Image (tube, rainbow, N blue to C red):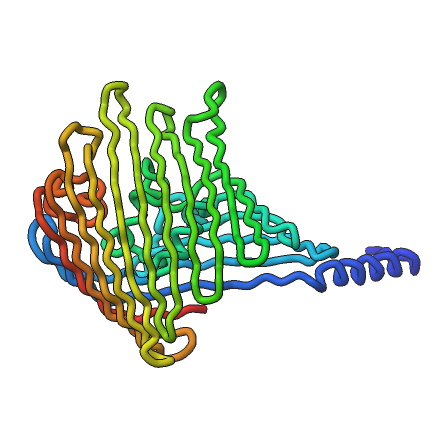
Length: 359
């Protein structure tokens, strides 16, 4: 058998290419990150009574992801992020068939701002996270009612597919806009979402406004949300205030529009470097629920979370939450499905304890 020996010129060329390749990736980085937690949860007020079960980390979504960047020169970087959520109790994906349910985006960042493409949060939700005491990390409707009015109302998905988003900043002023095209031939509204946000950071205070509008897949209904609020750092504590206004049209031309007025507030207090307390209250005053005339009702969500940090990455947590319902809200399909609420029930109470670690 004959072995061919490459010429010196070919060896030199290969070596040069290898060196150039190494140089081109010298300013690149890829990071693996994630959160995983679990514990025990007790819930009362469900159909059938009380239940004791596994807690899939109610204070933070279990997720894993990759993020990376490459320096392109001139202050511009190419970036990407892939993140998927899962159930720590079973190992199953949070969203069946969607491996990267949390984020799947690519983009550019530099002095001009940040431009990204893919599955991601929209500009309205970005601002909502800033004025949420849990930072949008709540993994259940029991503590994160904003999933109904602050994200995609028709799918209850906090992420939007096929999204183009821009974020910019000038001094303390930050702004963003996003658009999610539906991709339906002959219909520029079906399945679309657009949103915008503007906020200003002044020392310890942050305030802003945002807006979004979403059309359902058939373009027969739309939902829009106006949002305003802010935060204020006082010593070791941070105060949160928010107000959301949701409107949802009916599928039928003569159906009344649903309307929700939702004030909220909370506090995060770092008692010591290793111990933190969070508490919040969100009051949803709704009318024409299900686009039915006269179907009004209220929902009051309250919760408290205690976190003790064993290290910078690992913590023990204890949490208690209560949701009270009145009027037509006692038969709301979203809460019945997501929380297991007993149809017609007046309240749902839960308590969780567990362990959470980040990597």
